[in-house]
Image 1 (tube, rainbow, N blue to C red):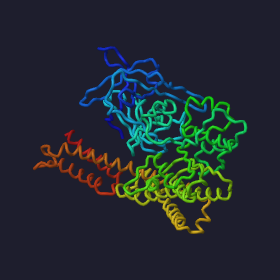
Image 2 (tube, helix red, strand yellow):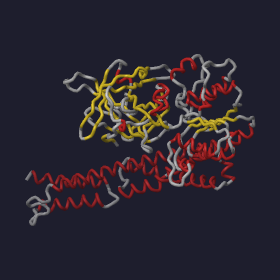
Image 3 (spheres, rainbow, N blue to C red):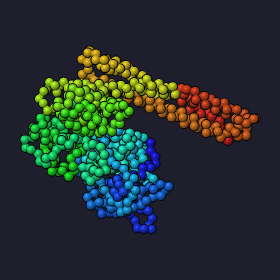
Image 4 (cartoon, rainbow, N blue to C red):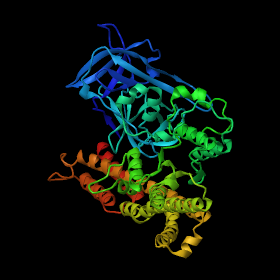
Length: 571
């Protein structure tokens, strides 16, 4: 869905012209940060010396227009980067020559830009006076310097020229979590890219006063050194980069890094700094040049790195909830809020075996794994058996949660979604007839999965013994295929329902034009033609409103009605 945007912090960036000239073209959008500063995309301006006009809506159709220029240290040009980094930069901090009301300004929020997060995009497409908003969701692997793909919720509702520099707002919290930077040229894909707040602040540290929310990594886990030590553990760096770069790899990765072992702490901290978008852009060249192959993880591949050393389960849960943007309800703890939502996160937990209560922490991590979180576990001590036990436990929770979530979706489609649609329309026309037949075979998969999940929930030892990575992957694949078949059947039936609704509208509109006409169906003395038309109308109406609707038959009946209606015009 999309509609007019009324946020006062959303401003329009326009080419600057001379007084009395016609309005110059709109370049894009920007975010008002305080009475004197606006953040936008550098590519809109093209040059740091250019002067633009910032326009803000005052209400009642009035527009406040203020000249603006780039601040001395506020120009980060858009660059194509290289094969690894991709497109980078593209920020401009403007200073207004006259202040706008400070109460119109917004703040920026650090939130984990997780896959499927529901967002709104704000911008100024051509000829839309007060701005426009589109609804979408985050998705896809991070690109370039950590920018995130945004996909529209509705086909065809795509980002167009005028959205660059606009806000990306988290729909759940209402917080500004990023800025629209560009769009994919392929209109069929409909995707665009967002620069998240974590990336912005690495380019422009002066944005810090306008930013809320904790950073993606606890400070003690970040890289401070500039140069790589010759004796650092390259193998560990490659393991970390490989795991972070492959979301389809094992859900849990455990490593041992003793606190004072610089050969392993250095590659760990570097990986965390890069993957969480925490390494300042100005340091990348000197810190990452000439590193061994395969040792740099993708920027943005880690949503949170938390140091659990001496921390309680509640403290770690609160840290994660803040990063995700979970709001606890009355009487709820942060962990309660985490339990009731999907959590497609990638998290590094440092000092698992040095937490205030390691077993309690592992129980929390089990909750996260079951909700979809991948985890990098960092242990201080050398106890391989304990590590293996914890990894196996969390691996179980992750795979169980994946099956349980897919089962919930399949069962809802099989027991509610499909039957509801079959009560509306009949499945007696291709492709619906075929897809419903195929979907009928999915019930056996759903029942089998329900039995397995129920047995695992009760701790059945036989079910647990049979629950291997291979068996869980096979069941998940069966459920995914079942869901695809159910989705196809639902979509085909929805197409028939949409046609039924169109036929209803067509019939009502056509009949409304003749009902009160002289000699028409509702007149005191209807003509023979009108009586025949009424019969045709009743036939079509009954087919369309008495469910389930036989759409092919209703289509023919409406056609007969329209033919009868046209015959009057030929008499």
